[in-house]
Image (cartoon, rainbow, N blue to C red; front, side, top):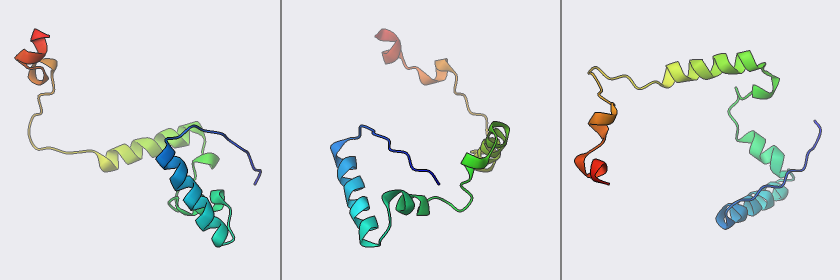
Length: 88
């Protein structure tokens, strides 16, 4: 596996978290990327997937996690906006 260095801007508390994760990784004799990679689900394989396969995988996930209701849901603008919203 080739290594790539990336610089990102994060909130200070996230930087502290990343530093502590890096220390934990080093204490175990690992690099941060190896430690973080170990946290991914076993089926995380998007790097090897084609765009069509990723799209199919995403659609399968949507179908598996869709919220199902047994009644009509009125999410029209008229049902969401209140008189106070219209007065602004």
